[in-house]
Amino acid sequence: MTINAQDNAAFAINDTTANPAPLGLLGFGMTTVLLNLHNAGLFPLDAMILSMGIFYGGLGQIIVGIMEWKKNNTFGATAFTSYGLFWLTLVALIILPKTGYIQAPDDFAMTSYLVMWGIFTGVLFIGTLKLNRALQVVFSSLTILFFLLAAADATGNHTLKIIAGYEGIFCGFSAIYAGLAQVLNEVYGRTVAPLGLLRQQG
Image (cartoon, rainbow, N blue to C red; front, side, top):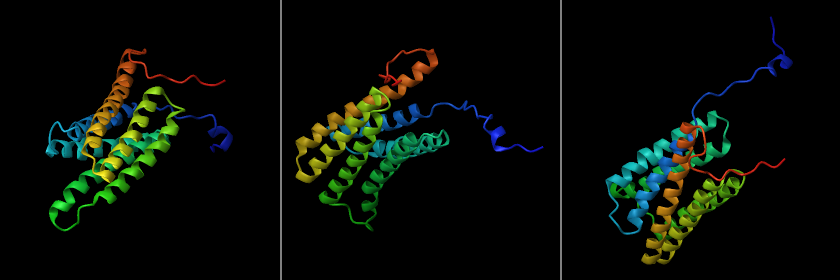
């Protein structure tokens, strides 16, 4: 018995796997809040932040990105995998120079690094205009955060970095909200925490 292309068209895979996005948003959001509490001057850069960057913000988001790829979600796969790798590169930028074998980046290098991530995030923000308001807040505030941090490194303005820290705390909590809202809405089967879903155009 053979099955031709026309027969194949009648078959569809029913995806019953869970939504990985809340895990990625929480990994990003919680790590972002903690790093920016440091940027705001509330505590020093320590092993707690670096551990969050490696595991929850880093490896956690990479796993979510792979899961989003399996769900055929190009935006989710690109965003979560990229930001997971961002956290790992940021930790490496801090740790590798301490080995004595690799030179620490200067202010211009860090400015360039942050500007590139700001551009990348700005383009992803354009993608969120087709998604929901909650993600628009996350990606717009993250774009602002990257450029504020870049400006702080470029100018050496400590006050600007503190401002960026508080803006980053807002960004992180917006991602936490977006992640937990999806969890609660799914558990209760109704909108408990609104995401600002966009109306579909007919």
